[in-house]
Image (tube, rainbow, N blue to C red; front, side):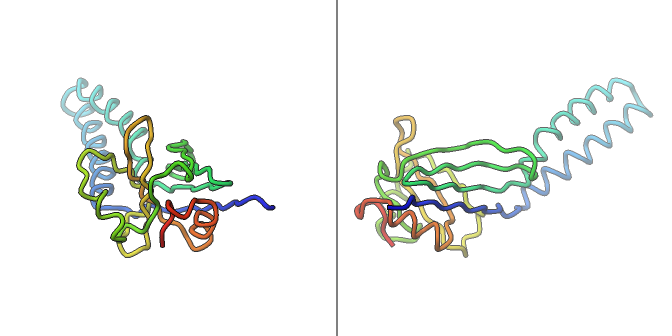
Length: 167
């Protein structure tokens, strides 16, 4: 029997908040540099701090998620600005309580749970078909939002117990 393998790259849609954060930090940094050169050198310290903030924050406004699914093991990596890669989650689909489309009636029970942590690793576009995976991570119930294509959804369905994956 062959291995079930699927890999997918999903680009997160840019939001107004991302653009405001990115360009706001850049403008504040430039203003602090000019203030440091013209008004007081003390503002250069603020400019350096803002520059460091830009270095760490701006790459997180251009994000892609890579899904890697191998024989029931699901790994999610976050790729920032096409240069930095970070593993964000790993879980076994067989240990999930439920995997279903977000608009499924089976998901209604979990949507009302205020104590459940929600981790969104999708493009964020509500028009795309997104799935929720309900599983326990670190002892806590979590809803992981994914956006699989047809091949990945089929691989997940073939790997998961029938009680877990619902169309």
